[in-house]
Image 1 (cartoon, rainbow, N blue to C red):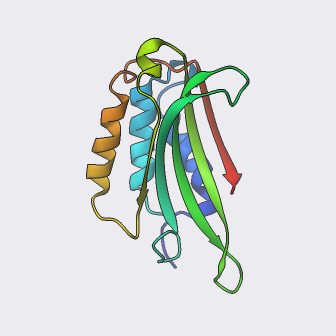
Image 2: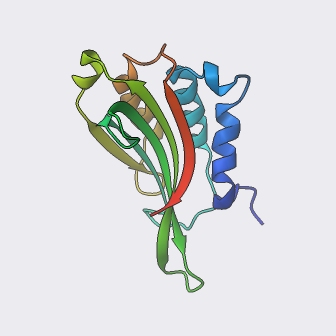
Amino acid sequence: MHDKPRIEEALDVLRAELEVGRSTTELTTRAAWLAFMRFARLRFATAPTPDSDGLLFQYGTYAFSGRPMFTVDLTRQFDISDDGGEHDHYVQIHCELRYECEPALDALGSSNSWFFQNANAGLDEWLTAMEGHLELLMARVPSEVDVYEEPV
């Protein structure tokens, strides 16, 4: 028996981290990032394969909800295996932070970066590098926050 949380608990774990001591209406980018870093450092009960537990940091201006918004998507991806231990699908846990478009944000363009817990060393270095992309946003409160899980 291990004491790592199960993958099925990941969405609730992230939501709990995001809500520690605040309501979502006062959730700054900095608070969301700190919550995501705590979530990223927590190891879940995953298979010991290189791509079983991945972190994705991505941003850009997108119109997913109908109108263009600058979106920062903080994602954790888990490999889900079938009963025989073979890959079946992935589950992604997202924390999307959306901001009204403005020239300074649009000028950032878009970017994405992956980190895999079982394949890469240096999680803290990766998190520090990703945090550098958020400099313009740290003190801001996103216009919208969406926390959800999806199979991919």
